[in-house]
Length: 303
Image (cartoon, rainbow, N blue to C red):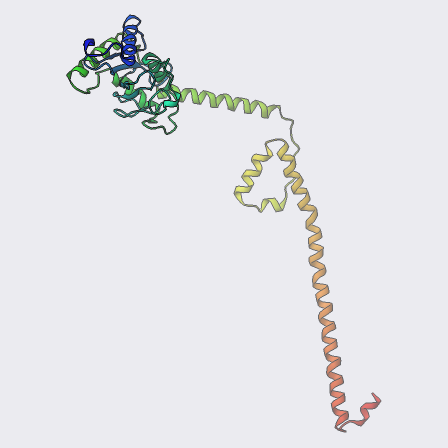
């Protein structure tokens, strides 16, 4: 590494060289990161997908750009490997990145940031800048594909470092867990459904027997859909009692309505005859008055 071109008294340079030494002396099985030979402020890294997630078994490369006043300001991150969680070659928005400098702590390091990045992989993106929300199946396919070759990025120096890191991570990456085949999923679903059906039948068998329902002509005239629903409810125990109560109420109220309907025509006929009699009496009085005033029938006074 061309360290002689940097001022070792500079706080950022001193801190970066210290982290490089620590990264080489204490490597991790979950990630690897090293700066470029010609620019120690630019790092290439690769992380393994977090275990027990759809990213498990994947190798995800990326780039870190450290600021000139590091570690007092946070670095920026971008992913180079398609992963379904973060956009590639786009600075991602995380609490450890330069998008949120208010959260950054000078005590944090590149190692700390990479550990946090791994933890962020399976979290909900929430619409953050540079985030993606691919289905788990697509993320799993991208995890498998990420093991094949390292991404192509930058000049020859960058690519050489990316390839070296990829070979190292291949020696650490576990096998990609296989997703359960659709047949097994269907079997589990069917078994769960059958268990629920058995529990339902058992609960129905324990229910006390219900009394026989007396046929009702009003109910027989209902629509087919309603009859089907009533039969299902009648087999549910307590709901059957409420159904029978409704039938009883309807049967009691039918005679009252019939009596009201029977009385109504009689009342109407009475008022009709009374009106006709009143009209006839008025006509007779008018005729009598007319004849008397014209002297046509003076004998009408005796009537």
